Length: 152
Image (tube, rainbow, N blue to C red; front, side):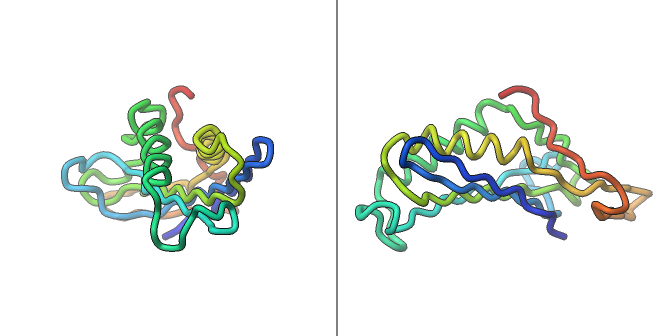
């Protein structure tokens, strides 16, 4: 089951980035059965910069994606254990999609701000677990739950 999305647009001078955060219940990764996880994706539009090509990221584009992803993962700012629903069976997978709309420099800063802001605004559905039964409550039934963020 997918959740609502948090959509954030950030601009630094003429650089513009849109980040979309969404969540989905999935099986955990085998190496971390009691932790949820993040899925990162970065899209570079040829309209943003003539150097960007469709389907073929440059080394700089790959490095941007890695820096932003590594910054979030290594900071351990988001509590991935809090994303666990049933250990070894169900966890939240948080998808972070960043789209570069216009490139005029400072892409790392702009993408990082958009990602962090999106994670702060994102809310997931409340879950009730009784035995092996999982109930996903709608936003109308119960208030949505923010991610557990230790620090920024």
